[in-house]
Structure formats: structure tokens, C-alpha cells
Amino acid sequence: MFRITAILFAYCLSATASAQTIDIEKSEIIDLTHSYNDTTIFWPTSPIKFEHKQLAYGDTPGGYFYSAYSIALPEHGGTHLDAPIHFSREGISAEKIPLKQLITPVFVIDVQAQAKADRDFRLSLADVKAFEAKHGVIPQGASVLLRTGWSEHWPDTKAYMGDDTWGDASKLSFPSFGAEATSYLVKTRKIALIGIDTASIDYGKSTEFKVHRIVGAANIPALENLTNLAPLPATGAILIALPTKIEGGSGGPARVVALVPKK
Ligand SMILES: [Zn+2]
Image 1 (tube, rainbow, N blue to C red):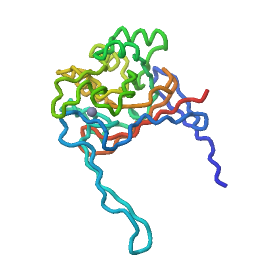
Image 2 (image 1 turned 45 degrees about the vertical axis):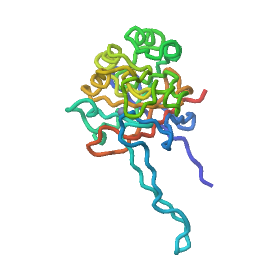
Image 3 (image 1 turned 60 degrees about the vertical axis):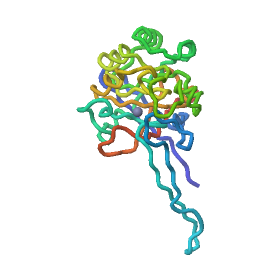
Image 4 (image 1 turned 180 degrees about the vertical axis):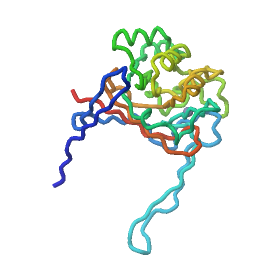
């Protein structure tokens, strides 16, 4: 019989925060990732969506089963990571992102009520300060996820993006981070990573992509199109976000999970 023993690992934050220890056996492992398939939502100006082509499937002359597929997709669709170089010429590319920025304590700001009332909602500095007043200061090296509730719309492109006209990104509408709040998280709190359960860390109506530019300039990666944020507490979970290691990549598909302490 094979027995899995508890794996303990201590996650040490910077000097500004206390160490956090996670016991795998006492944690729920939550998948925050959409599957890739024919309905995966991509930015409307993408040249292709997810292509999964069968190369082989079935019994071989050797008497064993064999299947294999090829994949093709733009880097920015489905649950994926934006590397800093996505919106910053000097930013690092996907393979160079330090793993320490991808395995972090995570803080989850819930703005579902505001997003429901206004689908063009943007997280404000006051919202972040209200979160910190309730849950404590977001420590250096942590990640911040924004829970808008938008993943409930997936894969309904019109509901999720605000418009489903392929080739046209001018009529999008969905909630996201605001520039002032992001500057505060990046420059004052020095977070490691941000992420959201919508298609972009800039709101749908954005034309300047200020949030992408702020995090890119600070070499902070971002996660987009997350799902299943409901089981995550505001504080106390660990985020593990591992993108495909594409050399020179501006981002790419990521498997994202959270470790949530069992109650
Ligand atoms: Zn992206």
C-alpha cells in the first residue's frame, strides 16, 4: 500500500510579512482554470482560437493504443498568464518570471456586488483600502485576485465580453482593476502578481490599457480568465500559477490552483 504523508512547506514572505506554512493534507486544492476547448473565449482580434488536431487515435499494428494531438492558439485566451513584456518593451518574457512570483500567498478582493450593479466597474484605491481595513495590509510578495463573479458567464462570449463581434474589440464591457488601485498595489504594497476572473486586467472599455502598462513596467505578471474563485477566502490561501514556459513569450496558457486550508 502506498501512503502519502503530509507534505509541509513553509512559505517565507519578505521581512514585512510573517511566514506561512501550508499542510497539503489539511488543504483543499482548488482548480482556478478553465479547460481549453472549442468554446474557449479569446480576445476578439485574435487570428485563431484553440485548435486541437488529432494526429493519431486508435489501435496500432503493435497491439497497443496510441493517441496524440497538435495544439495551436494565441497566447492570450482561456486561463492564461500575461508576462510583463506583453505591455512593456523592457519587461521580462514568460520563461524568465521568477517562480517566487508564481507561488505566493493570495489575497482575494470580492467586488461581485459592485460588478453586478455596474459591468464597467473598476477597482478603486478606496476599495483596496477598505479591503485592507477589514483583512489587514496586503504584504509584499503576495498576489491579489479580483473576484467579479464574471466566470459565471463563461463561455457565453456576449455576456462575458459585453460583445461577441469577432474582429472588433471596440464594444467590450466587463469589470476589472482600476489604474490608481493597481499603482498602489504595485508601488506601495509591492505585490508579486495580480489576477482576475474576466478577460483582462483592464476593464472592457479600456483603450489605453493602463493597468497592463503599470504591472508590465514593474515586471509583475497577470492572470486572466480565472474561474472558481468562490471557495477562496479573502486571506490565508496559497496561489500556484504555472504558465507554459515559452521562451520569449508574452504570456501563455497557465494551470492555476489554490491551496485553501480546510476548516
Ligand atoms: Zn493576456
